[in-house]
Amino acid sequence: MKKLYFLLSITVMLSAACNKPESNTIQGKIEREQIGIVSKVPGKIVELRVKEGDFIRKGDTLAILDIPEVDAKKSQAEGAVQSAKAQYDMALKGATDNQLKQLEAKQQALKEQYEFAQKSINRLSNMLKDSLVSQQAYDEAFAKYQGAQAQFLAVQAEISDVKYGVRIEQQKMALGQQERALGALQEVSVAESERYIIAPQDLVLESITLKPGELALPGYTLFSGTVSESTYFRFTIPENRLANIQKGQEVTVNVVYKDTQIKGKVTSVKALGAYANIATAYPDYEMQESLFEIKIDPIDVNQAKDLFTKTTVTLGL
Image 1: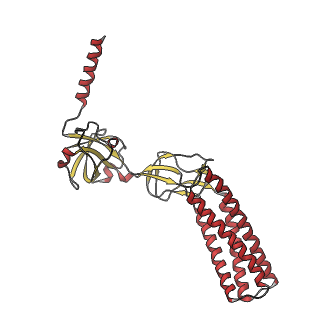
Image 2: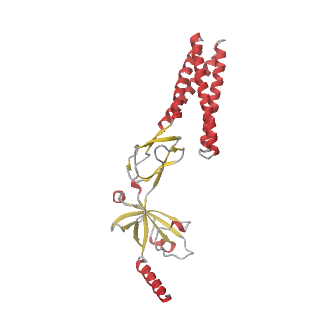
Image 3: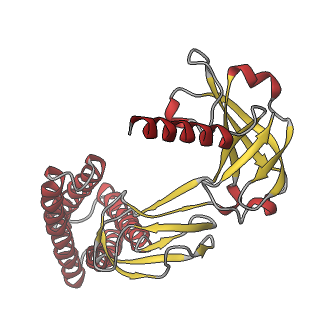
């Protein structure tokens, strides 16, 4: 039995030796630039318009989110704009009974906006404790809450002031309130557009992390893919072969699975800090030698755009 194990070991070693490439040839991999697409606002996915493996064009809609808070806030912002405009007109022309009613309507709108902001900050506070939102998102919401509170207190003071006439300082304040309300409406419009997840550039979609009905949180990667025109070849060489290659050098890369050759140019030579990054299957190096990563871009991008990533390529040195 020991003799049989010995013969099997010799057979495996001879097989590995036969499969080892020639010493002047190194192996590498086909790579592409990766890209992740995230959501900017929290929302529930109501529709997916793509599937894994699709080629996506820049500007394509990948998914649609349901953001009910934005719809509610938009109505409040529109009411605040109307009320702020009426308040500014009143400050210029003087208050009447009808204008006072408009100011009171503004007070009611700002009160609703303030109460909504208060509910939002309470909800985000609980989510922050569970690490469901970032500290940045919570701070932004808290700033909006403080702004809503300030607006509500300001309109209460304005109602008191208009009964005794409007000073020039108050007119300026009314103008500022109007501009702030317009800014809040614009902010809501921007948030509303974020319900559509748009492709930032052409890419091949590799994975979709959520399904319809699931909650997408800010900063969470919803889609990932590769940029089809970013194909490059990556090799790992020891320092004893570094003299055989230099940046800007034109080389010929052999695509093993297609048995074709592609002309390329060395665009990057950098030292590796971890052996886990080695791309060569049979690296010929001494343990004390440094390793370098060689990046080669195809001269004709169209020749490489349909190649499969992570497949093997060879390069003669």
